[in-house]
Amino acid sequence: MIFLIKGLLIGFTIAMSIGPIALLCIARTLKSGRLAGFSSGMGAATADGFYAVVAGLGVATIIRFLGDYKSSFFVFSGLFLMILGVKIFLSEIPPEKISASGKDYLKNYFSTFALTIVNPMTILSFIAVFGTLGIGSDGDDHFSVLSISIFVLGAFLGSALWYLILCTGIEYLSKKFSSKSLTVINRVSGIVIWIFGILTILSIF
Image 1 (cartoon, rainbow, N blue to C red):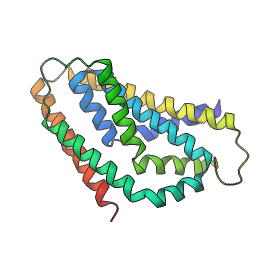
Image 2: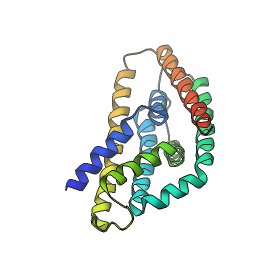
Image 3: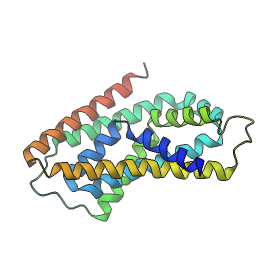
Image 4: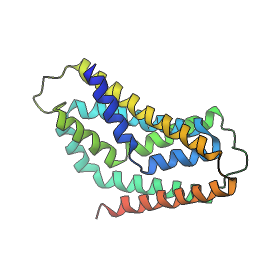
């Protein structure tokens, strides 16, 4: 139970940071409703769970892998963010939300999964957490596979919980604003996401 609780808290905390993923979920919620934003959040939560698994398998291995491909991760992630930022900036929020289909939800899910999976900060966050807890370190046999699995499940659920709260709150607040005001908010989000992309690429120098 303690591993589940730790996983929940850590997954929630890592996801809670206001970054490009959160802004992307907000933009999609404003345009197409809570499920559109939450499907995006679930993609990020799945990637969080994946990296929790990978980090648990061996911190040293992941650090070596990051060293080899760090620049590629930053460039790909940065370009992806810049493209999304421009796309969001150019879109307008209609008076009535655009209904999203199952295909749209899948697109939202996989786009944020891909973005999170190549986000170096996501990887490093879980490496730091597992390193602090001693999980997955070389020669460590204190934590069983079951314990790590429970921790990973908690991390996934914690991340998913945050995105559910975020998208539900944004949908509620969006009802208080006009479509014109929401379009302004959407464009600001697009600009910030684009800036995140630029900073991500510049950080490799």
